[in-house]
Image (cartoon, rainbow over all chains, first blue to last red; front, side):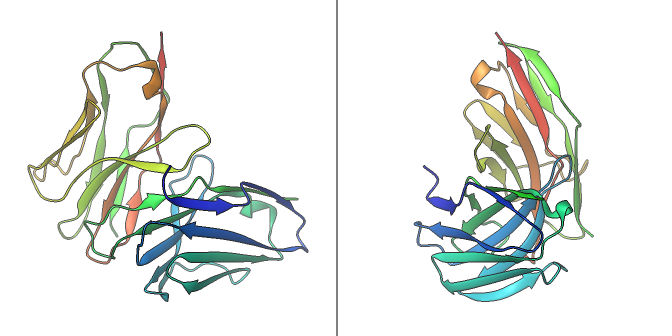
Length: 114
Length: 111
């Protein structure tokens, strides 16, 4: 058990749908992250939250909208996605934001956009 | 910018064979280096890490040494098991806490 849970585990949505991905960490960490994992590409960091404040947005299209209501929960709101957005979306958390920090990952949500 | 390059897979080995997965990095500063492993249907798990030059990370029989002179962090294991079959990711974290991952190397160990 990693201590980081993600729901749903699988999601199929049309391009006009609105859906949300949820991540919860039970580790008492202060930083949370969203990554995108596509086939044959390195993990792409999308967003970073540190103490509920967004500290990084790696040029992610506005059809992805993160929300961090508290240090334990992180959401990714999805709206009018494209088929190329189909991927595994991974959430992670870490105690702090220093470069030596280990990130703990959830199992991911596998998203298919039709 | 900072980046990680790791050996392309897939790698297929027989049980008890020696494993090496190469990883080199490019960084302007002195990053921390990590190996993560992803088993089927799961997220990434930390396997080992090293935070400064000449540090050796080790876990579950896996080892990697932070080599500043060759900018490398190669993963090794003396005798692999079927249960080691997974995808292995090399990663670095710089002063901005921007974690950069390699593309991953899929390892399959056959009995």
